[in-house]
Structure formats: C-alpha cells, structure tokens
Image (cartoon, rainbow, N blue to C red; front, side):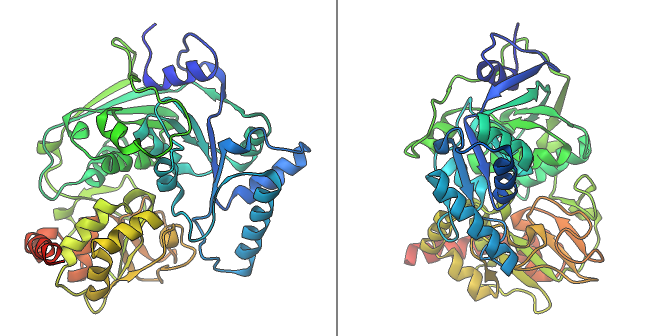
Length: 438
C-alpha cells in the first residue's frame, strides 16, 4: 500500500510493514526533548517509581523559556532540573548561556533527522519536520512515560498535501506564506493531521524558511508537518553529529492517499505581506488592508523567526536608521551560535545603533513572562507564533504577527508598514558596503 511520509515513519518505528490513517500504533522514540517543563515531567516520572530513565542519551533538556530566571520560583525549578539531569546522567543538557531556543538547538546539534520520531513537551516541536522527522508536541505526563519506556502510542494521522508554486514576490517571505495558508485552512483546519508541503516555492526556500512553515503548522492544528528532504537538508545537517541514521530517500509514495490537496499559486495569491491580527493566528489579512496601525513595540525572534536570515533582513532595513521614538524594538537571536554569527556580521551593532535592544537567546516575551511584555492599550507587531489575547502581557493589548521585514520596518515608522516604505533596498546596499569595508 502506498504511504505518506508520516505513515512510513510510524510504520518503521512501530515495527510494521505498513500502517493506515486512524490505526493505533506504539512507536519507539528516537529523541525526547523538554525545556523548563522538564520539571513537571520529572515529578510524574518520580511518581511512576522507576529508578532510571530508559536511555539518557536520547533525552535532551534545554532551558529556553524563562532565561535567565525571572523569579525565585523559576530559579528553584532550574535547580531541580539540573539535579535531575546530573542524577540520571543525561549528557544532552543545555543550560543558560550554552544553547538557545530548543527548536534551534535540536537540529543544530544533530538531534533531528529524516525518519526520526521526535517528541517534545512544547507544541512547536512540529518545527523538526523540516528535517524529515515525525516531530510532535506531547504533555509532561506523556513525557514521563517516554522517559520510562522509550515508547509512545500514536493514532496514525490523515495527511493534507499543500502544494505551493511560483516565485515569491520581493516583500513576501515564508512567514507570509504560512500565515496565508493558516488563514485559508483556519486554526483547526489541520487538526491531528500530517501536512506535507511541496511545490517550487517550498523547494526554493532555505532550510531556515522551511522551518517557519513546519513551526507554524501547529497553529492550524497539525500533529506533524514536513517539507522536502533534499540536498539543502543534507548540507544543513552535514558536520552536526547527527545522532541517528537519516533516511535520505524518505518521501511519500506515488499514489499515497491524501485527505486534501491544496494548491497555491504564491506569486498570484500572496502578492503582499500578510498579517495575523488580534486575537487569532488565522485572522490573517493582507497588510494593505490594515490602515495605519500604530505600534508601541516590535519583537523579532522566537522559534519561528530568530534565525540568521531573519536577523540579516532586519539589519538590511535598520542600517543607518533609528527606531521611532515612541516605539521599542526587541531582537532575540534563536541561539548562542546565531548570536555569535550576527556579531561577526555586525548585525548586532546595526541593531544597537538603531536603538533596538538585543535579548539573550531564548523565548523571552513570546510567552508573556518577561523581557518585553506589553501593557494595556499597547500594540505590538511580532515575528513570533501566537497572538492570543494576553499572550504577550495585558489582556487589553493587541498583538499582530508578521514577517521579520515588516517588524523591522514598522519599528522605524511607528506603525505597521511595508518594508519598501522606509527604503529597504538602500539599507541593503549600505549594509553590503559596510561588510566590504569590514
């Protein structure tokens, strides 16, 4: 029977020749990731009464949500997890200042690969489908079970194929593409479904851009999401000490069954930047329809858009310019490695001279805890992944989701705007000149 990517991975992981949608399987887990909520999994694990985790080498724990600790309570949680990691002999631990956002650290350190079954106590674990992994978020209690047995049951998901073709317009990025798709399918349009992205638009994207597609697929309910497994993925993972055996030939079979096949002409349908307006990720509108929305803050970062290419776009736009006096811009690299690269390329200097603040790698204001929450009556445009009411602070604030380019440009004008409004091309030239001089 022809199978989709999700079906192939679950068949292998459960020791079956083939599986079909809605079938229940018990799959072996290749990688189990947690961040600070490892403390909740730790407590459930101790209640089970097993002395040692099933395989410490397959467990990855990364502090990223509340770093540095913003309260005594968080500091106590960090301490408890550190002690657990030491007691269990878990070698794959990324403490404060030694890693970054979990969904950046996993692929960059070889914990995600084609054919892997990867679970994480974070909803945006779907990100790792950009590397061909069956990657999905689970709860802390489920994770305690994984730590105990190394297995987890799944219902084999139906698959939606999203084919995106055409050359993206100048101001349109992967963020705009996935916001458009979410707006089209709705917030529950892919509930417990696998999503396979394909088409020339996706093939031409960088791996970092494909990660944006798989990351935000969760916001339309996807269980897992995949982009093509090709030479770009192979090149990205080369030299990263991949922990498993990649299936470089992994792809859906000809004749595999899809619940739905959505075809999008990106050049025609996504003619301008897209913005998710308050208070739902699927409340997506073309930027030109918004009017002049004043903003008090811009946020550039998160597991969605904190990679080097995102910082490069912002640096091009901000070069030689200043943040609007009534606006703040917070920039957060996704990892220590990306932070260092941005330093070398002088992006960080560009941000600071423009009047932005650069936070340490982590989730920061995305979850509304610290490092940039917003007050009642304030508007924020962000490159993050959720704009639910109260997500980034006050329930009486408004959060808009947009691409890094729109965030950077808007911070200059003080309202949500097109990047071309503030001369992004000129900024690009100045940045190139600066690199040559350096």
